[in-house]
Length: 179
Image (cartoon, rainbow, N blue to C red; front, side, top):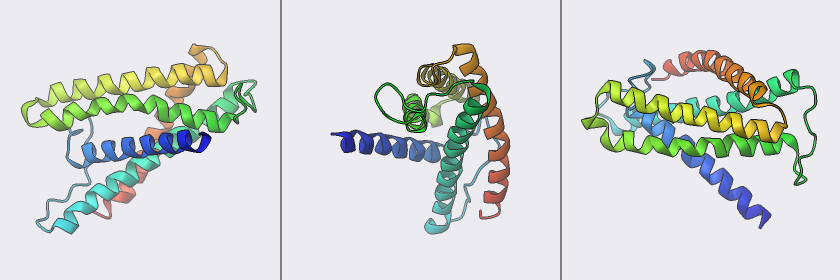
């Protein structure tokens, strides 16, 4: 049973990364970012390369977010539990928490379905609301897993997002060379 729940969590995480990459690749996020890996080439294989670059972009973003949350928690929080109440290590539980907070990103599906009939402003508002839901969920989960106040969790999560955005723009610059 332990293996099954772990496999399900990884499957959910993989599906969420692929969902975000697909949204990014189809320019569904064009209202909030100017980064695009979509090459408008008639060759099917060359145009799919942008999807794979988008996937690398979001895998890097996930790893940056998890890594910086862990790093800032170790730095800014006085006592990080080595083992949580259920016997799992803190990094393992934090990883589960980041994946579970990402479940709200399934709300990106309406953008894929209705992007042709939506305005850029409407899509941008929808994306911002989904990301706010994700951040609030992540702050709540971090607060519980790290056993710290929500204000400190909010600071740690926001710092991690800012630093992740900085490094992800550097990664996207490197990935743009492959388009």
